Image 1 (cartoon, one colour):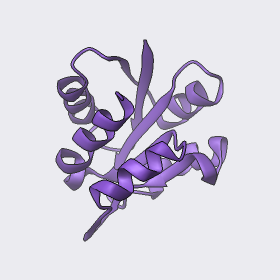
Image 2 (cartoon, helix red, strand yellow):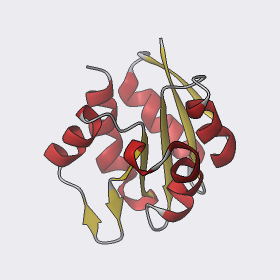
Image 3 (cartoon, one colour):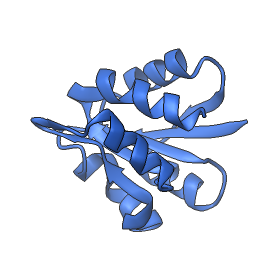
Image 4 (cartoon, one colour):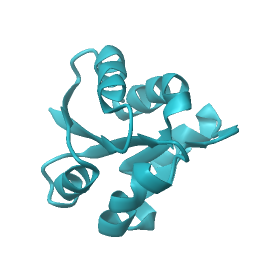
Length: 119
């Protein structure tokens, strides 16, 4: 079973609850600090990282960017701008493993991310 870790700076439990709702048991899910979550992906202890903050890229992805590199990370939403569903799916298909978004957009992006990761 693939594992998703929840990092980022805010709304971790809410993000976890949404991931659980949409994953329907397809993933193991764990909340960690952003550093521990990014390390888990780097070390192969987790497959994917999701994180929320107020900007979608700063606190949501800072540790993931530092540890996993830009090629493995993507900001799928930022204030006033949500990546299209097609673009989110294309990022996942391209191999991205860490996803940052604003907490305000979690209800929009999480269902798309989980659906595509579950394929």
